[in-house]
Length: 229
Ligand SMILES: Nc1nc2c(ncn2[C@@H]2O[C@H](COP(=O)(O)OP(=O)(O)OP(=O)(O)O)[C@@H](O)[C@H]2O)c(=O)[nH]1
Image (tube, rainbow, N blue to C red; front, side, top):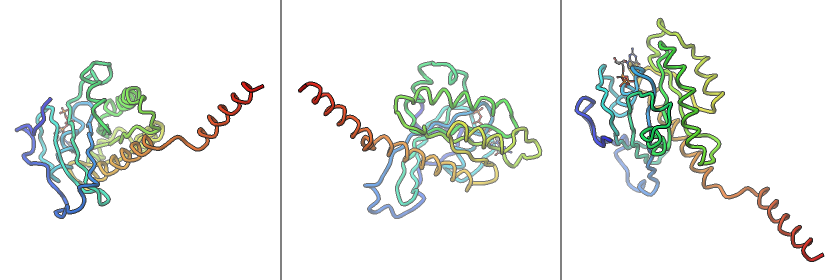
């Protein structure tokens, strides 16, 4: 596991978008994000765009974990982003793959709108992640599906509608972006993911619902009554 920037990728360190952090430390949230997708869909381009606001064009294929702090809705979010080259292992149950999924709080699944095979692999990736994160018991595993290379609309083979429907049917969020042309849409992807991660964390903390408490209390009293007869 590489825990620093690889030389072939952008040279930057975790930056803060808002200079005044006073008083926000108590609200800090650490979050681990894995960016996945098949070859050449723009995983590194998307990650580097989010981290540096820049599009460089060519990126190595070295696996890296980047750290980056941003403010989302007044709260400091400390991102650890694992940009991993595609491997078939995601679809199998190798321990490296399990480790990656176990490590992550949220997932960015990228496909290229010009590459149908990359789109077709997304639903398998979603299944694989959900199967492993099942033990959390959260309704929605924080996953965002991203159709990248929107600027290449003349070479599009996957419609926006198909992307949206896939996200709807798998309970994921959906964005179409161009890492090459637009920083803001990429920012929205990560903000959307933070939102989902927060929701998942909140639903984990939620105490048992009033209905289930009433149910178990009635069961106890019913048993007591039968015992005393
Ligand atoms: N036109 C266009 N090209 C893009 C976009 N995003 C990435 N690319 C190009 O697509 C190619 C692959 O981008 P990468 O970011 O290296 O893709 P990757 O998914 O990390 O690739 P692997 O590391 O091989 O898995 C590069 O030539 C990028 O310049 C985009 O939004 N529009």
